[in-house]
Length: 343
Ligand code: UT7
Image 1: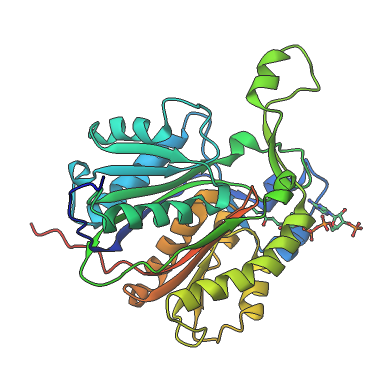
Image 2: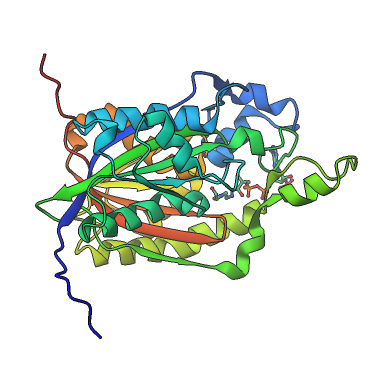
């Protein structure tokens, strides 16, 4: 039997981006006392100078809501125009209901399709891939893709391997129909044999089952830094080049590079391995935002556009990679300048 319907497709693009960083700026000097480190070591090994931490009473959803409202307004829309929400996060402490449905309630639009995805630092690019397909196939018209993390809740401030890296923040984009192709093919996959390299341990189940056991602490990120570093440096550059090629671009014709903000040394190494010319503008938001996992790419995109408004509408290569290990990349056309409100 063949189904009887016509498949009508359209193009999609990122219409707007919004970002939220919690107000509390945390310098390295505040981190180092508990991990026997120095400001110099952190800056030299990661590029991080400061990061933002949310206060105890500021939740992941609070941050997500603020960035979503900015993105929606910049698209010239209201929350009622959004008909699907894809929420990428690894720091929402509930299995159900999803962070996406909590966000819908905050936005006052409880009818849109809504779901979470767990792809860690690749989560935002996974979300862009899904949103592109939803819009292209007219399953949804305007999709809000969120990347939000409150990693300070899941980082042990005494863990020398992670305490200086992870941070909090939220970034969102609205993806909607477009005349031209604004999102290129996604190149994605996993290196699941290395799934032990970044884990959240113990599990909530172990934590719940062993309330009195001091060895079973609250779940925190545990990372084999060097394993992940090597993987990122050697495996991601060829993937990024494949992503460029899939979009019909070369290092010479690319305009902007926004990789996951994991470590400035990884970013520099990718730029070198890919032989990106100096004309390509590279995001280094890690220096003042730290590593915010799924939020890092939209935060970096927003910061670049604020700093260099002339980049609106330019081609940007996005590449996310992290726990799984998983990765995803696509070339996008950066959003046009925000719609100006007339009085
Ligand atoms: O976003 C998800 C994906 N995550 C990533 O992409 C993270 C990838 N990994 C990294 O960014 C890096 O591995 C880190 C920044 C986490 C660590 O940098 P590293 O250069 O790999 O450090 P290391 O673990 O190899 O340690 C080098 C040295 C060691 O001393 P010796 O043996 O050379 O004397 C460590 O004991 O640095 C020492 N060290 C520290 N020193 C001061 C390790 N941690 C610290 C610290 N402060 N916090």
